[in-house]
Image (cartoon, rainbow, N blue to C red; front, side):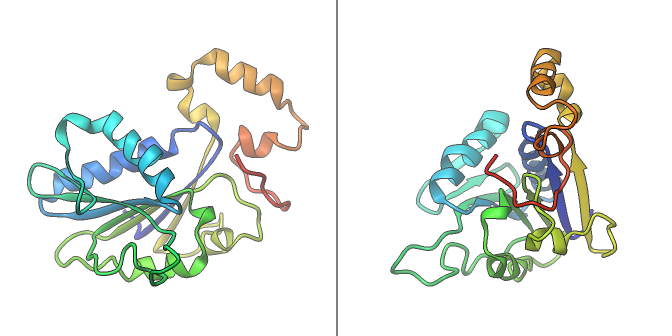
Length: 207
């Protein structure tokens, strides 16, 4: 229930599924709630994030294409947005004017810091719980998100949670995990990121 939640970790650890499930749970628990799920690029927001939401919860969702949101029973809404502005639009045009209670940013390591700060101001829907979820791949220690969410969890409103590939063992299966362990054995420079979900001092490659 922390205001800002960073669920960060290994590839295929189930981060996106967890965050989308939390968005749905909040919408169901608080009728009329306004939420937004987003990525940096619109193509990925629609092609991956929106598609995954439909895959998980499709029967209970009604899509309003013109306004770009899903409607749930109880008049809750989930807006889908790519945050990157067009060349002829203002910098924060993709979410300007939205009053939200819940925001989920997938792959926030792609998002400039000022967008994150601007999105905080959108958490303003009265009489609803306010939360922001972020699901980055493992970061390098110099990334702004690493500084915003220290592993020591020293900020009361900000929660860092590390995930590993083993946290998603039931969904992935033992064979996949064993193949991953063979590809990235102990001592391999990418094992910390791909399996253990740990940050490192070096710049992270694209996962």
